Image 1 (cartoon, one colour):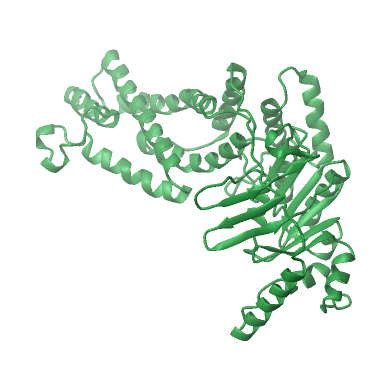
Image 2: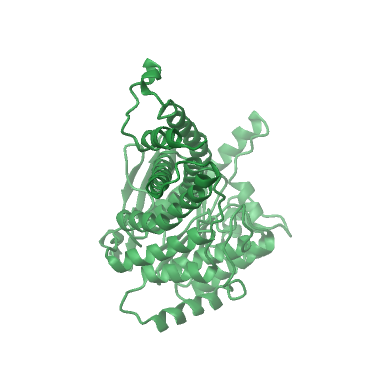
Length: 472
């Protein structure tokens, strides 16, 4: 039973009780801001109590408290979070390596992946890259089905899907809901949130929960019962009207005028009171464990290496290119890492170490190529030791800029904010971290900048040691 979920200034769910059964597709429906996603997140263990969020109640699975664990939960988010440079098959293979037991034979894992590709209709695009807004890849509907496939790797008992039809056309939306329907028929307990489905999508639901302004208006079978229930309260669904549209209009506030707002709110209050004898649903805590070990690190290194090899980013200059590449990619990747860590696929340490290990060869390649071309063209000091020192400084500069990019990407809330903040910080280091050959000429206000920073050392090394010995 889930009794209470309260956000500051808004009640998302109060005195709610219900049941989701295996083999049945259940939908949480309601207008925007009704509390669908909040309730789904709490049930799926994606939200925990905090000073700004009060939770109370209990969630039971097969008669046992959910907090005791032993049950696998899948959660499909609204956003499609994938590594864009990997193919569909590689994405599933990586998920299988991280979630399936190491004792499972590779042949069984391959067979499991092939079965998922067939079940979710991904065979035709199995060897296509996932893609993103810049790189053309699979369609939106295929990404939704791929998200489902990644969650099904661990054979979950319960599947939660938050707005699975968002951003899809009518055909793709119906295909995704048909997939969820088949998963329910296979014995899974499937719960999804949805705003206002078309008639053919609504007909696939077995049960519905109608939420309005954070409270339950109806909960029960989805076919004829809700229409007859509301008809008994004086709200008759017109003939030949989509039941989903009728229900959505019935529990939504009309903001056309002050009169319509007052009348619609009064109607919703009456509907909530009529359903007030119902009891609650629950809180769930996630008790997944985080795998460790060298095998996990090897798998993560393999993923990072593939992604780096296929990412075709031009090297404009050593520091700025390294910074921009990292700052532009990491905030997006962070969302994927957060999702996989929430499932317990791996811990932060193995991910970070594998990422750095995979990026070292590529991070060093561009500075070395840059140095090999620039050094003789600029006619710098023609000795091998000076050339090695020059390339070493440029390479260290690249790594330092990448580290700065990771820091900015981890701190910034969005990619746009990271892209604005990163180059600004780099400009400060470039101008005042070694631009002046003679430190004594540096304005007093900037002398506090540490001389031991890698960026300052790199630029001073380039300016003082190389150009003084130049043959120009």
